[in-house]
Amino acid sequence: MLGLSAIRITVVALGYVTTAVYGGQDRGVGEMGSTPIDSGALAGQRCRVIVSSDIGGTDPDDFQSMVYLLVYADVLDIEGLISSPYGPGRKEHILQVIDCYEKDYPNLRTYSDTYPTPDRLRAITKQGQTEVAPYAGVRGPTEGSDWIIQSARRDDRRPLYILVWGGIEDLAQALHDGPDILPRLRVYWIGGPNKKWSANAYQYIVDNHPKLWIIECNATYRGWFVGGNQAGQWGNKTFVAQHIAGRGSLGDLFVRKLDQIKMGDSPSVGWLLKGVAEDPRRPGWGGQFVRAWQRPYLRSERMTTNEDRIEVFGILELVLPLVGDMPDKPVAELLVENQSVSGYALGDGTIRFRFCPKEAKTYSFTIRSNVPSLNGKSGGITAVPPAPDAGQRPCADLPNWWTDNPAPELAEGPHIGARTVSCWREDFLRDFAQRMLRCKVPSSLQAGSGR
Image (cartoon, rainbow, N blue to C red):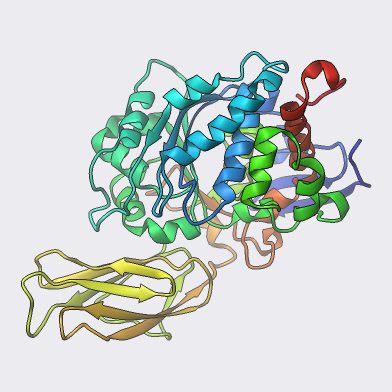
């Protein structure tokens, strides 16, 4: 059996006690030691789930996370798979994973008759928004956003969990078109790099739906592949070679896309599998969070410089005057590293840009425009980490908003909160390895198989 000697780590933060054990049998305790981590979908709690993914876009890790989701599909009620890219990904990429699932389905179903059929999964796969939202935060309904509304309005007393692995545009559109669904939703968003592409949709939600129940996970998710025990079989590459490669069509797809663990969206699934989904303060495979403080936002009516500061993952809004000779249709782009941020002229004599820094560092940017007074303007901004005690100042206007715990002892390097995931590394990888065996052999050939 997999396992190493146990090392216990106990962290006391914001009045909550978390005990994590590397390689041992303990599963931790929740708030004041009252709730064991042996709760969640693997303990029999069935959750309604929709996944919104940018699979097939700029990062192969969504393919890996989709494999992870599907081998646990027997313990979740998956109601939708939505393609919501800001890049080239499309619905067809989800269908490619389902094709692999279909090949492994005969083996998977020998372990549980609650695995959904491949045709059922195809029927609930929808195309979402393929462009980033404009300044207003919404562009128009999509098959994906309509599906979220339909699902949320079904006659089911359980909340609907929306796991967002990419852009948040379809969720914003669904809230815009069907605001009555808000109390039914529980959202876990892998933000961070995704947030920089969805700054307008994000700000729309903050400004118009502040009571949304959401985990804004900007850095904690990195604990899935950064930190924890990575010795021997637990290493990112070694684990894939020993426990994923050759395990069914899904295992082969996982390795073809990337031969090491990335699967940075998987903590959202882990949150449902092991933990108390309704209380993000408590420990679980998806991390441990704090009530969000006022969401960082800086509005500037001039080009900022490197001397200006904003909290990392915050929203910088530049509101610049349109002066001098003007074309009939002013166009401008803010060029920042690999990103081109469109400017929006709202008819008030200004043009506006929203930018979200994904790392704590200094950014430089330049404007390219057909407006002579703007073209070639340059500036910058320095993104800084949140204050270590920021989590002790929850925002009253965001009563159900959760985010990464900035306590220094819970960070993995620069990634705040990531240790609340990495401390469970052996547990979730051991379980995943057992699940992947299901793709390769039927239950009759695997005595004492995993769940």
